Image (cartoon, rainbow, N blue to C red):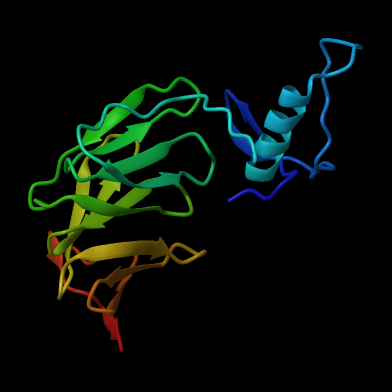
Length: 193
């Protein structure tokens, strides 16, 4: 998340946070040196209180509600997932879909995504009993991780990338060591709680 005054720059190489700039309720009209009408000032005050967002791409390839979004660590990809069971990997500069991910075993809506710190893997989970781990370059499913209790709502790799955590609606947290075990469907290495 960005704070007020925290610029983000999008380039062909990715998205980058830049040095903070002064931000506040400064109302500027660069198109005119004349007096600004009261209605314009009122509208600008309203925008300054709520913040201003300028969309640069619209994620409209999903047929259901989008439940989660994740930027890759280098900012060159965005993963989106939702109730239509689709997991899409996008290019944030062009708005084009790079991969539409389809799992062999995951059957429910996807509600959580997390990129590995190196950006080479993406974990997704949702309303079934699995976390699927994908190769982000090929879009291939690499591992299916069985989640006891199912209904995954949160996923996170640790900063070193050697563990993946999942949390479900039952309040359970499961940890997997990375690299994952060789079997196609792996059980968690640790259950917290």
